[in-house]
Amino acid sequence: MEHTESASDGLLSGCCHLSYLIPLAVLLIVGYVLKTVMFRQKGDNPFHRDVRKPRAPVVLDRDVRKKVLKNHFHQSKVPERVDAIVIGSGIGGLTTAALMAKANKKVLVLEQHTKAGGCCHTFSEKGFEFDVGIHYIGQLQENTMVRLLIDQLTEGQVAWEPLDDNFDTVVLTKKESGGPAKRVPLHAGRETILQNLIDAFPDEEKGIRKFLNLVKDASSTSLAFALLKLLPYRFCRFLVSSGLIHRFTRLFRYSERSLQEVLDEVTTDDDLKTVLAYCFGDYGVPPSEASFFVHAILLRHFEKGGFYPVGGASEIAFHIIPTIEAAGGRVLTRAQVTAILDDGHGRVVGVRVAKGSEQVELRAPVVISDAGVINTVRMLSKDVLDRNPTPLPRIVSTLRPGYGFLSLFVGLRGTKEELDLQARNYWIFSGKKLDHDFSDFMSIRDPEQVASVDVPMLFVSFPSAKDPTFEQRYPGNSCCTVVTFAPWEWFEAWKDAPVNKRGVEYDEMKDNLGRRMWEHTCDIFPHLKDKVEYFEVGTPLSNQHYIASTRGEIYGMHHDVPRFSPQAIVDMRPDTQIPGLFLTGQDVFTCGFVGAMFAGMFSASAVLGRNVHSDLAKLKKAIKKHE
Image (cartoon, rainbow, N blue to C red; front, top):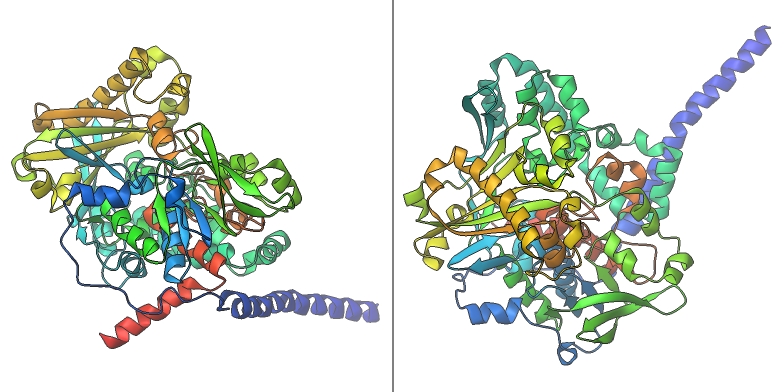
Protein backbone atom coordinates (compact mmCIF):
# COMPACT_ATOMS: atom_id res chain seq x y z
CA MET A 1 0.00 0.00 0.00
CA GLU A 2 2.80 2.38 0.92
CA HIS A 3 4.54 1.53 -2.34
CA THR A 4 1.38 2.34 -4.31
CA GLU A 5 0.91 5.69 -2.57
CA SER A 6 4.53 6.59 -3.19
CA ALA A 7 4.18 5.79 -6.88
CA SER A 8 1.02 7.86 -7.08
CA ASP A 9 2.72 10.77 -5.40
CA GLY A 10 5.58 10.48 -7.86
CA LEU A 11 3.17 10.42 -10.78
CA LEU A 12 1.29 13.46 -9.48
CA SER A 13 4.56 15.25 -8.84
CA GLY A 14 5.67 14.48 -12.37
CA CYS A 15 2.38 15.76 -13.79
CA CYS A 16 2.77 18.94 -11.75
CA HIS A 17 6.25 19.49 -13.12
CA LEU A 18 4.91 18.74 -16.61
CA SER A 19 2.14 21.32 -16.19
CA TYR A 20 4.84 23.94 -15.65
CA LEU A 21 7.17 22.61 -18.33
CA ILE A 22 4.57 22.81 -21.12
CA PRO A 23 3.95 26.56 -20.84
CA LEU A 24 7.69 27.09 -20.34
CA ALA A 25 8.36 25.23 -23.57
CA VAL A 26 5.70 27.25 -25.36
CA LEU A 27 7.19 30.45 -23.95
CA LEU A 28 10.58 29.49 -25.39
CA ILE A 29 8.92 28.78 -28.74
CA VAL A 30 7.19 32.17 -28.62
CA GLY A 31 10.55 33.79 -27.97
CA TYR A 32 12.05 31.96 -30.94
CA VAL A 33 9.14 32.95 -33.17
CA LEU A 34 9.40 36.57 -32.07
CA LYS A 35 13.10 36.60 -32.85
CA THR A 36 12.94 34.81 -36.21
CA VAL A 37 9.56 36.00 -37.51
CA MET A 38 8.56 39.23 -35.79
CA PHE A 39 12.03 40.72 -36.02
CA ARG A 40 13.12 39.46 -39.38
CA GLN A 41 14.07 42.33 -41.65
CA LYS A 42 13.33 41.50 -45.29
CA GLY A 43 11.90 44.63 -46.92
CA ASP A 44 13.27 48.14 -46.61
CA ASN A 45 12.64 50.06 -43.40
CA PRO A 46 9.84 52.61 -44.03
CA PHE A 47 10.95 54.52 -40.93
CA HIS A 48 14.67 54.73 -41.60
CA ARG A 49 14.55 58.51 -41.06
CA ASP A 50 12.26 61.19 -39.68
CA VAL A 51 10.47 62.79 -42.67
CA ARG A 52 8.60 65.53 -40.82
CA LYS A 53 8.93 68.98 -42.38
CA PRO A 54 7.91 72.47 -41.26
CA ARG A 55 4.14 72.61 -41.63
CA ALA A 56 2.80 74.57 -44.60
CA PRO A 57 -0.50 76.50 -44.46
CA VAL A 58 -3.70 74.61 -45.28
CA VAL A 59 -4.18 74.48 -49.07
CA LEU A 60 -7.42 76.31 -49.90
CA ASP A 61 -7.26 76.08 -53.70
CA ARG A 62 -9.99 73.59 -54.58
CA ASP A 63 -8.46 72.74 -57.96
CA VAL A 64 -5.20 71.76 -56.29
CA ARG A 65 -7.06 69.60 -53.76
CA LYS A 66 -9.20 68.04 -56.49
CA LYS A 67 -6.12 66.87 -58.42
CA VAL A 68 -5.01 64.90 -55.38
CA LEU A 69 -8.31 63.65 -53.95
CA LYS A 70 -10.37 63.19 -57.13
CA ASN A 71 -7.99 61.65 -59.66
CA HIS A 72 -10.48 59.54 -61.61
CA PHE A 73 -9.51 56.16 -62.98
CA HIS A 74 -8.30 55.67 -66.52
CA GLN A 75 -6.15 52.79 -67.66
CA SER A 76 -3.55 55.22 -69.02
CA LYS A 77 -2.99 56.51 -65.46
CA VAL A 78 -2.07 53.08 -64.09
CA PRO A 79 1.70 52.82 -63.41
CA GLU A 80 3.61 49.98 -65.05
CA ARG A 81 4.68 46.94 -63.01
CA VAL A 82 3.20 47.89 -59.67
CA ASP A 83 4.32 45.94 -56.61
CA ALA A 84 0.86 45.88 -55.08
CA ILE A 85 -2.75 46.93 -55.60
CA VAL A 86 -4.79 48.21 -52.66
CA ILE A 87 -8.59 48.03 -52.88
CA GLY A 88 -10.08 51.01 -51.06
CA SER A 89 -8.62 54.31 -49.87
CA GLY A 90 -9.76 54.37 -46.25
CA ILE A 91 -7.10 55.10 -43.66
CA GLY A 92 -6.20 51.38 -43.47
CA GLY A 93 -5.57 51.16 -47.21
CA LEU A 94 -3.75 54.49 -47.40
CA THR A 95 -1.54 53.58 -44.42
CA THR A 96 -0.49 50.25 -45.92
CA ALA A 97 0.13 51.84 -49.31
CA ALA A 98 2.12 54.74 -47.84
CA LEU A 99 4.32 52.50 -45.69
CA MET A 100 5.04 50.27 -48.66
CA ALA A 101 5.87 53.39 -50.69
CA LYS A 102 8.25 54.48 -47.93
CA ALA A 103 9.86 51.05 -48.32
CA ASN A 104 10.39 51.76 -52.05
CA LYS A 105 7.36 49.86 -53.35
CA LYS A 106 5.14 51.08 -56.17
CA VAL A 107 1.51 50.80 -55.08
CA LEU A 108 -1.76 51.42 -56.93
CA VAL A 109 -4.74 52.35 -54.75
CA LEU A 110 -8.21 51.95 -56.27
CA GLU A 111 -11.19 53.76 -54.71
CA GLN A 112 -14.78 53.16 -55.87
CA HIS A 113 -16.05 56.58 -54.68
CA THR A 114 -15.45 59.85 -56.53
CA LYS A 115 -12.98 61.06 -53.90
CA ALA A 116 -10.27 59.36 -51.86
CA GLY A 117 -10.21 58.97 -48.09
CA GLY A 118 -13.03 56.59 -47.16
CA CYS A 119 -14.46 57.81 -43.84
CA CYS A 120 -11.81 60.55 -43.84
CA HIS A 121 -13.46 62.39 -46.72
CA THR A 122 -15.60 65.51 -46.39
CA PHE A 123 -18.30 67.05 -48.55
CA SER A 124 -19.27 70.66 -49.14
CA GLU A 125 -22.73 72.01 -49.93
CA LYS A 126 -24.07 75.57 -50.07
CA GLY A 127 -21.26 77.14 -48.11
CA PHE A 128 -20.87 74.38 -45.51
CA GLU A 129 -18.39 71.53 -45.07
CA PHE A 130 -19.13 68.32 -43.19
CA ASP A 131 -16.96 65.47 -41.98
CA VAL A 132 -18.52 62.04 -42.52
CA GLY A 133 -16.45 59.92 -40.14
CA ILE A 134 -13.74 61.84 -38.28
CA HIS A 135 -15.31 63.50 -35.25
CA TYR A 136 -12.41 63.26 -32.81
CA ILE A 137 -9.28 61.13 -32.35
CA GLY A 138 -7.39 60.32 -29.16
CA GLN A 139 -3.72 59.82 -28.30
CA LEU A 140 -2.47 62.55 -30.64
CA GLN A 141 -0.39 64.37 -28.07
CA GLU A 142 3.20 64.97 -29.15
CA ASN A 143 5.52 61.97 -28.80
CA THR A 144 2.85 59.26 -28.82
CA MET A 145 3.13 56.34 -31.24
CA VAL A 146 -0.18 57.36 -32.81
CA ARG A 147 1.05 60.90 -33.46
CA LEU A 148 4.41 59.73 -34.74
CA LEU A 149 2.81 57.30 -37.20
CA ILE A 150 0.40 59.82 -38.74
CA ASP A 151 3.19 62.43 -38.86
CA GLN A 152 5.45 60.03 -40.78
CA LEU A 153 2.63 59.20 -43.20
CA THR A 154 1.92 62.88 -43.89
CA GLU A 155 5.43 64.32 -43.41
CA GLY A 156 4.03 66.24 -40.45
CA GLN A 157 1.73 68.32 -42.64
CA VAL A 158 -1.51 67.69 -40.73
CA ALA A 159 -1.96 69.84 -37.64
CA TRP A 160 -4.09 68.52 -34.78
CA GLU A 161 -6.22 70.86 -32.72
CA PRO A 162 -7.13 69.66 -29.22
CA LEU A 163 -10.80 69.69 -28.29
CA ASP A 164 -11.92 71.47 -25.14
CA ASP A 165 -10.60 70.01 -21.90
CA ASN A 166 -14.26 68.99 -21.41
CA PHE A 167 -14.12 66.93 -24.59
CA ASP A 168 -17.29 64.85 -24.04
CA THR A 169 -20.51 65.66 -22.21
CA VAL A 170 -23.14 63.03 -21.44
CA VAL A 171 -26.70 64.37 -21.31
CA LEU A 172 -29.43 62.33 -19.65
CA THR A 173 -32.80 63.82 -20.58
CA LYS A 174 -35.76 63.35 -18.24
CA LYS A 175 -38.68 63.62 -20.65
CA GLU A 176 -40.97 61.16 -18.88
CA SER A 177 -40.52 62.74 -15.46
CA GLY A 178 -40.45 66.26 -16.85
CA GLY A 179 -37.33 67.06 -14.85
CA PRO A 180 -34.25 68.93 -16.10
CA ALA A 181 -31.62 67.07 -18.08
CA LYS A 182 -28.64 65.79 -16.12
CA ARG A 183 -25.28 66.71 -17.64
CA VAL A 184 -22.10 64.81 -16.85
CA PRO A 185 -19.04 66.61 -18.27
CA LEU A 186 -15.93 64.51 -18.85
CA HIS A 187 -12.59 66.31 -18.73
CA ALA A 188 -9.26 64.99 -19.97
CA GLY A 189 -7.18 62.97 -17.51
CA ARG A 190 -7.86 59.68 -15.72
CA GLU A 191 -8.09 61.19 -12.24
CA THR A 192 -10.20 64.07 -13.56
CA ILE A 193 -12.64 61.70 -15.25
CA LEU A 194 -12.83 59.70 -12.03
CA GLN A 195 -13.71 62.85 -10.10
CA ASN A 196 -16.24 63.92 -12.77
CA LEU A 197 -18.05 60.62 -12.31
CA ILE A 198 -17.92 60.73 -8.51
CA ASP A 199 -19.24 64.31 -8.54
CA ALA A 200 -22.19 63.19 -10.67
CA PHE A 201 -22.84 60.00 -8.68
CA PRO A 202 -21.44 60.54 -5.16
CA ASP A 203 -23.09 57.41 -3.73
CA GLU A 204 -21.47 55.20 -6.39
CA GLU A 205 -17.77 55.91 -5.78
CA LYS A 206 -16.90 52.29 -5.00
CA GLY A 207 -18.48 50.98 -8.21
CA ILE A 208 -16.96 53.76 -10.30
CA ARG A 209 -13.46 53.02 -9.01
CA LYS A 210 -13.94 49.31 -9.62
CA PHE A 211 -15.11 49.94 -13.18
CA LEU A 212 -12.16 52.18 -14.05
CA ASN A 213 -9.72 49.68 -12.53
CA LEU A 214 -11.23 46.95 -14.71
CA VAL A 215 -10.89 49.27 -17.72
CA LYS A 216 -7.21 49.78 -16.91
CA ASP A 217 -6.54 46.06 -16.52
CA ALA A 218 -8.49 45.08 -19.64
CA SER A 219 -6.75 47.65 -21.82
CA SER A 220 -3.34 46.42 -20.58
CA THR A 221 -3.94 43.14 -22.47
CA SER A 222 -3.95 44.87 -25.87
CA LEU A 223 -0.37 43.72 -26.57
CA ALA A 224 -1.55 40.10 -26.61
CA PHE A 225 -4.37 41.14 -28.95
CA ALA A 226 -1.85 42.68 -31.35
CA LEU A 227 0.55 39.72 -31.19
CA LEU A 228 -2.22 37.33 -32.19
CA LYS A 229 -2.57 39.37 -35.38
CA LEU A 230 1.16 39.34 -36.12
CA LEU A 231 2.52 35.94 -35.09
CA PRO A 232 2.26 33.11 -37.65
CA TYR A 233 -1.31 31.92 -38.16
CA ARG A 234 -0.72 28.24 -37.48
CA PHE A 235 1.22 29.00 -34.32
CA CYS A 236 -1.60 31.23 -33.04
CA ARG A 237 -4.18 28.59 -33.86
CA PHE A 238 -2.15 26.10 -31.83
CA LEU A 239 -2.02 28.44 -28.86
CA VAL A 240 -5.80 28.90 -29.03
CA SER A 241 -6.82 25.29 -29.76
CA SER A 242 -4.54 23.92 -27.01
CA GLY A 243 -5.78 26.46 -24.49
CA LEU A 244 -2.20 27.51 -23.76
CA ILE A 245 -2.97 31.08 -24.74
CA HIS A 246 -4.90 31.52 -21.48
CA ARG A 247 -1.71 30.88 -19.48
CA PHE A 248 -0.04 33.93 -21.01
CA THR A 249 -2.74 36.60 -21.09
CA ARG A 250 -5.90 37.80 -19.34
CA LEU A 251 -7.19 39.11 -22.68
CA PHE A 252 -10.05 36.65 -23.06
CA ARG A 253 -11.17 37.19 -19.49
CA TYR A 254 -12.31 40.59 -20.79
CA SER A 255 -12.87 40.12 -24.51
CA GLU A 256 -15.39 37.31 -24.03
CA ARG A 257 -17.33 39.21 -21.40
CA SER A 258 -20.01 41.73 -22.32
CA LEU A 259 -19.94 45.34 -21.22
CA GLN A 260 -23.39 44.84 -19.69
CA GLU A 261 -22.09 42.08 -17.42
CA VAL A 262 -19.43 44.41 -16.05
CA LEU A 263 -21.90 47.27 -15.60
CA ASP A 264 -24.26 44.99 -13.67
CA GLU A 265 -21.36 43.89 -11.49
CA VAL A 266 -20.31 47.39 -10.43
CA THR A 267 -23.65 49.20 -9.98
CA THR A 268 -27.43 48.98 -9.93
CA ASP A 269 -27.86 52.64 -10.92
CA ASP A 270 -29.23 52.76 -14.48
CA ASP A 271 -28.11 56.36 -15.08
CA LEU A 272 -24.56 55.50 -14.05
CA LYS A 273 -24.61 52.46 -16.32
CA THR A 274 -25.55 54.74 -19.23
CA VAL A 275 -22.75 57.18 -18.41
CA LEU A 276 -20.12 54.42 -18.05
CA ALA A 277 -21.23 52.96 -21.40
CA TYR A 278 -21.84 56.35 -23.07
CA CYS A 279 -19.34 56.06 -25.95
CA PHE A 280 -20.53 52.67 -27.23
CA GLY A 281 -21.57 54.60 -30.35
CA ASP A 282 -17.85 54.94 -31.16
CA TYR A 283 -17.78 51.24 -32.03
CA GLY A 284 -21.47 50.67 -32.70
CA VAL A 285 -22.51 47.91 -30.27
CA PRO A 286 -24.91 48.19 -27.28
CA PRO A 287 -23.70 47.02 -23.84
CA SER A 288 -25.38 43.59 -23.87
CA GLU A 289 -23.56 42.68 -27.11
CA ALA A 290 -20.32 44.64 -26.76
CA SER A 291 -17.04 43.10 -25.72
CA PHE A 292 -15.82 44.77 -22.55
CA PHE A 293 -12.28 44.67 -23.97
CA VAL A 294 -13.09 46.94 -26.91
CA HIS A 295 -14.98 49.34 -24.64
CA ALA A 296 -12.00 49.45 -22.28
CA ILE A 297 -9.43 50.24 -24.95
CA LEU A 298 -11.68 52.96 -26.32
CA LEU A 299 -12.05 54.63 -22.92
CA ARG A 300 -8.28 54.50 -22.46
CA HIS A 301 -7.81 55.89 -25.98
CA PHE A 302 -9.71 59.07 -25.07
CA GLU A 303 -8.45 59.28 -21.50
CA LYS A 304 -6.34 62.36 -22.28
CA GLY A 305 -8.93 64.00 -24.51
CA GLY A 306 -9.51 64.28 -28.24
CA PHE A 307 -8.12 66.06 -31.31
CA TYR A 308 -9.45 67.25 -34.66
CA PRO A 309 -7.52 67.74 -37.94
CA VAL A 310 -6.97 71.41 -38.75
CA GLY A 311 -8.49 72.08 -42.16
CA GLY A 312 -10.96 69.20 -41.87
CA ALA A 313 -10.75 65.43 -42.23
CA SER A 314 -9.84 65.54 -45.93
CA GLU A 315 -6.43 66.91 -44.91
CA ILE A 316 -5.45 63.36 -43.92
CA ALA A 317 -5.80 61.76 -47.36
CA PHE A 318 -4.61 64.96 -49.05
CA HIS A 319 -1.23 64.65 -47.33
CA ILE A 320 -0.83 60.84 -47.41
CA ILE A 321 -1.43 60.45 -51.15
CA PRO A 322 1.76 62.38 -52.15
CA THR A 323 3.78 59.88 -50.08
CA ILE A 324 2.34 57.03 -52.17
CA GLU A 325 2.84 58.83 -55.47
CA ALA A 326 6.42 59.89 -54.65
CA ALA A 327 7.43 56.23 -55.01
CA GLY A 328 5.75 55.91 -58.42
CA GLY A 329 2.36 54.76 -57.14
CA ARG A 330 -1.06 56.26 -57.79
CA VAL A 331 -4.38 56.73 -55.99
CA LEU A 332 -7.27 56.59 -58.45
CA THR A 333 -10.96 57.17 -57.75
CA ARG A 334 -14.10 55.97 -59.54
CA ALA A 335 -12.33 52.63 -59.79
CA GLN A 336 -14.79 49.96 -58.68
CA VAL A 337 -13.08 46.60 -58.25
CA THR A 338 -15.53 43.88 -59.26
CA ALA A 339 -13.28 40.82 -58.86
CA ILE A 340 -9.98 39.69 -57.39
CA LEU A 341 -8.18 37.65 -60.03
CA ASP A 342 -6.33 34.38 -59.44
CA ASP A 343 -4.15 32.15 -61.60
CA GLY A 344 -6.35 29.06 -61.36
CA HIS A 345 -3.89 27.42 -58.95
CA GLY A 346 -4.84 29.26 -55.80
CA ARG A 347 -2.74 32.44 -56.08
CA VAL A 348 -4.13 35.97 -56.37
CA VAL A 349 -2.62 37.88 -59.31
CA GLY A 350 -4.60 41.10 -59.69
CA VAL A 351 -8.02 42.71 -59.90
CA ARG A 352 -10.78 43.51 -62.38
CA VAL A 353 -12.06 47.10 -62.50
CA ALA A 354 -15.38 48.27 -63.96
CA LYS A 355 -14.94 51.15 -66.39
CA GLY A 356 -18.31 51.97 -67.87
CA SER A 357 -19.55 48.86 -69.64
CA GLU A 358 -16.01 47.47 -69.89
CA GLN A 359 -13.93 45.44 -67.43
CA VAL A 360 -10.23 46.28 -67.10
CA GLU A 361 -7.85 43.67 -65.70
CA LEU A 362 -4.84 44.90 -63.72
CA ARG A 363 -2.04 42.61 -62.57
CA ALA A 364 0.13 42.72 -59.46
CA PRO A 365 1.95 40.13 -57.33
CA VAL A 366 0.14 41.37 -54.21
CA VAL A 367 -3.42 42.55 -53.63
CA ILE A 368 -4.36 44.19 -50.31
CA SER A 369 -8.05 44.63 -49.58
CA ASP A 370 -9.33 47.54 -47.51
CA ALA A 371 -12.87 46.72 -48.65
CA GLY A 372 -13.86 44.65 -45.61
CA VAL A 373 -13.98 40.88 -45.19
CA ILE A 374 -17.45 40.40 -46.68
CA ASN A 375 -16.76 42.44 -49.81
CA THR A 376 -13.39 40.73 -50.21
CA VAL A 377 -14.93 37.24 -50.10
CA ARG A 378 -17.54 38.30 -52.65
CA MET A 379 -14.77 39.36 -55.03
CA LEU A 380 -12.92 36.03 -54.79
CA SER A 381 -13.62 32.98 -56.94
CA LYS A 382 -14.92 29.83 -55.30
CA ASP A 383 -11.91 28.01 -56.71
CA VAL A 384 -9.34 30.16 -54.89
CA LEU A 385 -11.27 29.80 -51.63
CA ASP A 386 -11.47 26.02 -52.04
CA ARG A 387 -7.77 25.65 -52.86
CA ASN A 388 -6.52 27.47 -49.74
CA PRO A 389 -6.92 26.90 -45.97
CA THR A 390 -8.19 30.45 -45.52
CA PRO A 391 -10.36 31.47 -42.56
CA LEU A 392 -12.28 34.04 -44.65
CA PRO A 393 -15.39 31.87 -45.27
CA ARG A 394 -15.54 31.02 -41.56
CA ILE A 395 -15.39 34.71 -40.63
CA VAL A 396 -18.25 35.56 -42.98
CA SER A 397 -20.40 32.65 -41.80
CA THR A 398 -19.89 33.13 -38.04
CA LEU A 399 -19.69 36.93 -37.69
CA ARG A 400 -21.93 39.66 -39.04
CA PRO A 401 -21.67 43.25 -40.24
CA GLY A 402 -22.28 46.04 -37.77
CA TYR A 403 -25.46 48.05 -37.34
CA GLY A 404 -26.50 50.73 -39.79
CA PHE A 405 -26.16 54.42 -38.95
CA LEU A 406 -28.15 57.56 -39.68
CA SER A 407 -26.35 60.90 -40.03
CA LEU A 408 -27.84 64.37 -39.98
CA PHE A 409 -25.87 67.27 -41.48
CA VAL A 410 -27.08 70.75 -40.50
CA GLY A 411 -25.68 74.02 -41.82
CA LEU A 412 -26.11 76.91 -39.39
CA ARG A 413 -26.11 80.66 -39.95
CA GLY A 414 -23.62 82.28 -37.60
CA THR A 415 -20.05 81.83 -36.33
CA LYS A 416 -19.12 79.58 -33.42
CA GLU A 417 -18.84 82.66 -31.19
CA GLU A 418 -22.25 83.98 -32.24
CA LEU A 419 -23.86 80.57 -31.70
CA ASP A 420 -21.84 79.72 -28.58
CA LEU A 421 -20.63 76.41 -30.05
CA GLN A 422 -17.97 74.45 -28.19
CA ALA A 423 -15.20 72.14 -29.41
CA ARG A 424 -16.64 69.07 -27.76
CA ASN A 425 -19.08 66.22 -28.31
CA TYR A 426 -22.46 65.65 -26.70
CA TRP A 427 -23.94 62.20 -26.11
CA ILE A 428 -27.68 62.57 -25.52
CA PHE A 429 -29.75 59.73 -24.04
CA SER A 430 -33.52 59.93 -23.66
CA GLY A 431 -34.55 56.62 -22.06
CA LYS A 432 -34.41 54.96 -18.67
CA LYS A 433 -32.49 51.77 -19.45
CA LEU A 434 -29.93 52.16 -22.21
CA ASP A 435 -29.72 48.58 -23.47
CA HIS A 436 -33.45 47.96 -23.26
CA ASP A 437 -34.27 51.24 -25.04
CA PHE A 438 -31.74 50.51 -27.76
CA SER A 439 -33.12 47.00 -28.34
CA ASP A 440 -36.70 48.30 -28.62
CA PHE A 441 -35.61 51.01 -31.05
CA MET A 442 -33.65 48.67 -33.34
CA SER A 443 -36.44 46.05 -33.40
CA ILE A 444 -39.06 48.44 -34.86
CA ARG A 445 -40.22 47.39 -38.33
CA ASP A 446 -43.63 49.07 -38.68
CA PRO A 447 -43.23 52.10 -41.03
CA GLU A 448 -45.75 54.13 -39.00
CA GLN A 449 -43.73 53.55 -35.84
CA VAL A 450 -40.54 54.51 -37.66
CA ALA A 451 -42.07 57.84 -38.65
CA SER A 452 -42.82 58.82 -35.06
CA VAL A 453 -40.09 56.97 -33.16
CA ASP A 454 -38.15 58.59 -30.32
CA VAL A 455 -34.43 58.19 -30.92
CA PRO A 456 -32.87 56.90 -27.66
CA MET A 457 -29.28 58.01 -28.35
CA LEU A 458 -27.72 60.90 -30.27
CA PHE A 459 -24.11 61.90 -30.86
CA VAL A 460 -23.94 65.66 -31.50
CA SER A 461 -20.82 67.42 -32.72
CA PHE A 462 -19.92 70.83 -34.15
CA PRO A 463 -16.94 70.30 -36.51
CA SER A 464 -16.80 74.03 -37.30
CA ALA A 465 -16.06 74.74 -33.63
CA LYS A 466 -13.22 72.23 -33.59
CA ASP A 467 -11.40 73.48 -36.69
CA PRO A 468 -9.68 76.89 -36.31
CA THR A 469 -9.63 77.34 -40.12
CA PHE A 470 -13.37 76.85 -40.63
CA GLU A 471 -14.26 80.53 -40.28
CA GLN A 472 -11.60 81.44 -42.84
CA ARG A 473 -12.85 78.82 -45.28
CA TYR A 474 -16.59 79.25 -44.69
CA PRO A 475 -17.03 82.74 -43.19
CA GLY A 476 -20.16 83.43 -41.18
CA ASN A 477 -21.28 79.80 -41.10
CA SER A 478 -21.14 76.83 -38.73
CA CYS A 479 -22.10 73.19 -39.01
CA CYS A 480 -23.53 70.44 -36.84
CA THR A 481 -23.38 66.67 -37.28
CA VAL A 482 -25.83 64.39 -35.47
CA VAL A 483 -25.44 60.61 -35.60
CA THR A 484 -27.52 57.68 -34.38
CA PHE A 485 -28.22 54.04 -35.20
CA ALA A 486 -30.75 52.87 -37.80
CA PRO A 487 -31.65 49.34 -38.88
CA TRP A 488 -30.76 48.42 -42.44
CA GLU A 489 -34.22 46.89 -42.77
CA TRP A 490 -35.91 50.32 -42.60
CA PHE A 491 -34.35 51.25 -45.94
CA GLU A 492 -33.70 47.90 -47.60
CA ALA A 493 -36.63 48.27 -50.02
CA TRP A 494 -34.74 51.06 -51.83
CA LYS A 495 -31.30 49.39 -51.91
CA ASP A 496 -31.32 48.90 -55.69
CA ALA A 497 -32.54 52.41 -56.53
CA PRO A 498 -29.92 54.93 -57.71
CA VAL A 499 -28.63 57.51 -55.26
CA ASN A 500 -30.69 60.74 -55.15
CA LYS A 501 -33.47 58.97 -57.08
CA ARG A 502 -35.02 56.73 -54.47
CA GLY A 503 -38.44 58.34 -54.52
CA VAL A 504 -40.75 60.42 -52.38
CA GLU A 505 -41.48 57.72 -49.79
CA TYR A 506 -37.79 57.22 -49.05
CA ASP A 507 -37.17 60.96 -48.83
CA GLU A 508 -40.09 61.43 -46.46
CA MET A 509 -38.92 58.63 -44.16
CA LYS A 510 -35.37 59.89 -43.84
CA ASP A 511 -36.46 63.52 -43.49
CA ASN A 512 -38.93 62.59 -40.74
CA LEU A 513 -36.18 60.79 -38.86
CA GLY A 514 -33.85 63.74 -39.41
CA ARG A 515 -36.44 66.16 -38.04
CA ARG A 516 -36.91 63.99 -34.94
CA MET A 517 -33.14 63.96 -34.42
CA TRP A 518 -32.98 67.74 -34.79
CA GLU A 519 -35.90 68.28 -32.38
CA HIS A 520 -34.05 66.25 -29.72
CA THR A 521 -30.87 68.21 -30.44
CA CYS A 522 -32.71 71.54 -30.09
CA ASP A 523 -34.08 70.43 -26.73
CA ILE A 524 -30.48 70.83 -25.56
CA PHE A 525 -29.55 73.70 -27.91
CA PRO A 526 -32.82 75.66 -28.35
CA HIS A 527 -31.05 78.74 -29.71
CA LEU A 528 -30.09 76.82 -32.88
CA LYS A 529 -33.65 76.06 -33.95
CA ASP A 530 -34.08 79.11 -36.22
CA LYS A 531 -30.48 79.16 -37.52
CA VAL A 532 -30.81 76.30 -40.03
CA GLU A 533 -29.65 77.02 -43.59
CA TYR A 534 -28.92 73.49 -44.80
CA PHE A 535 -30.43 70.15 -43.77
CA GLU A 536 -29.51 66.72 -45.16
CA VAL A 537 -29.92 63.17 -43.88
CA GLY A 538 -27.65 60.24 -44.72
CA THR A 539 -29.07 56.74 -44.24
CA PRO A 540 -27.53 53.26 -44.20
CA LEU A 541 -28.04 53.32 -47.99
CA SER A 542 -25.85 56.43 -48.15
CA ASN A 543 -23.13 54.54 -46.27
CA GLN A 544 -23.46 51.65 -48.70
CA HIS A 545 -23.13 53.97 -51.68
CA TYR A 546 -20.24 56.13 -50.49
CA ILE A 547 -18.08 53.69 -48.51
CA ALA A 548 -19.35 50.38 -50.00
CA SER A 549 -20.54 49.00 -46.67
CA THR A 550 -22.66 45.87 -46.97
CA ARG A 551 -25.63 46.84 -44.75
CA GLY A 552 -25.07 50.50 -43.99
CA GLU A 553 -22.50 49.89 -41.25
CA ILE A 554 -19.59 52.26 -40.67
CA TYR A 555 -17.46 50.09 -38.38
CA GLY A 556 -17.02 46.95 -40.47
CA MET A 557 -17.76 43.61 -38.85
CA HIS A 558 -19.83 43.84 -35.66
CA HIS A 559 -17.67 44.58 -32.59
CA ASP A 560 -19.59 42.15 -30.38
CA VAL A 561 -18.34 39.38 -28.07
CA PRO A 562 -18.06 36.71 -30.84
CA ARG A 563 -15.73 38.97 -32.83
CA PHE A 564 -13.33 39.02 -29.89
CA SER A 565 -13.32 35.28 -29.25
CA PRO A 566 -9.89 33.61 -29.46
CA GLN A 567 -10.63 32.03 -32.85
CA ALA A 568 -12.01 35.22 -34.40
CA ILE A 569 -9.11 37.35 -33.15
CA VAL A 570 -6.66 34.93 -34.76
CA ASP A 571 -8.67 34.64 -37.99
CA MET A 572 -9.11 38.40 -38.58
CA ARG A 573 -5.55 39.28 -39.53
CA PRO A 574 -3.56 40.72 -42.45
CA ASP A 575 -2.46 37.41 -44.02
CA THR A 576 -5.43 35.53 -45.44
CA GLN A 577 -3.64 32.22 -46.08
CA ILE A 578 -4.28 32.86 -49.78
CA PRO A 579 -0.99 33.53 -51.61
CA GLY A 580 -0.83 37.11 -52.82
CA LEU A 581 -3.83 38.38 -50.81
CA PHE A 582 -3.76 40.47 -47.64
CA LEU A 583 -6.33 42.43 -45.63
CA THR A 584 -6.12 45.86 -44.03
CA GLY A 585 -8.51 48.25 -42.29
CA GLN A 586 -11.11 47.93 -39.53
CA ASP A 587 -11.72 44.21 -39.97
CA VAL A 588 -8.09 43.42 -39.20
CA PHE A 589 -7.70 45.20 -35.86
CA THR A 590 -10.49 47.39 -34.46
CA CYS A 591 -12.73 50.13 -35.79
CA GLY A 592 -12.09 53.84 -35.86
CA PHE A 593 -9.27 55.93 -37.29
CA VAL A 594 -6.48 54.64 -35.06
CA GLY A 595 -7.65 51.02 -35.17
CA ALA A 596 -7.72 51.05 -38.97
CA MET A 597 -4.42 52.97 -39.20
CA PHE A 598 -2.62 50.46 -37.00
CA ALA A 599 -4.20 47.66 -39.03
CA GLY A 600 -2.57 49.33 -42.03
CA MET A 601 0.79 49.18 -40.28
CA PHE A 602 0.30 45.49 -39.37
CA SER A 603 -0.62 44.75 -42.98
CA ALA A 604 2.50 46.52 -44.21
CA SER A 605 4.51 44.36 -41.80
CA ALA A 606 2.97 41.21 -43.27
CA VAL A 607 3.56 42.26 -46.88
CA LEU A 608 7.07 43.63 -46.37
CA GLY A 609 8.16 40.78 -44.12
CA ARG A 610 9.49 42.99 -41.36
CA ASN A 611 8.29 44.32 -38.01
CA VAL A 612 7.26 47.82 -39.03
CA HIS A 613 5.94 48.58 -35.54
CA SER A 614 9.44 47.90 -34.18
CA ASP A 615 10.86 50.21 -36.85
CA LEU A 616 8.52 52.97 -35.70
CA ALA A 617 9.45 52.41 -32.05
CA LYS A 618 13.15 52.69 -32.93
CA LEU A 619 12.51 55.94 -34.80
CA LYS A 620 10.62 57.30 -31.78
CA LYS A 621 13.58 56.43 -29.56
CA ALA A 622 16.04 58.07 -31.98
CA ILE A 623 13.97 61.27 -32.17
CA LYS A 624 13.76 61.46 -28.39
CA LYS A 625 17.52 60.97 -28.12
CA HIS A 626 18.22 63.94 -30.41
CA GLU A 627 15.68 66.32 -28.90
